[in-house]
Image (cartoon, rainbow, N blue to C red; front, side, top):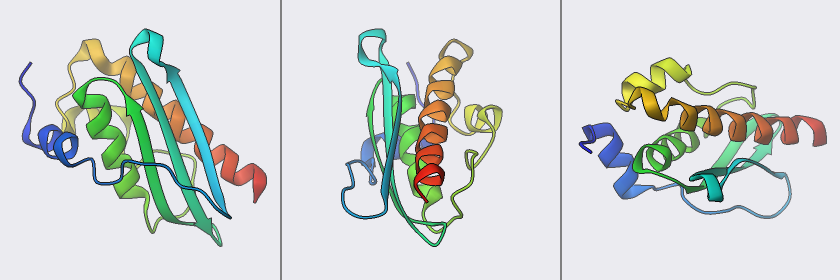
Length: 122
């Protein structure tokens, strides 16, 4: 499969890959490795602002690239219950084929679970 420049860049660097621990850290995950896609986000919040964000992912290069991008875009933003762009917008940005759109929904579910966790505990 041919990947666009955005996908290749975020997949190859995955700069925000990893897990967070400590105070004010919240976690959410979605998907299932047995079915080919699993994503976890960890965020650290201070006064409702996402001070740090990390991800772990099992999946195709699109899944890893988009999860990395979501984590990157989140830092410094308010902890709100939505992705930095719509699923359709992300699909276009990363040239995700239609047969992989379900993976973007798993990323969205993981992100929403993470923010829900932060909002519940805050």
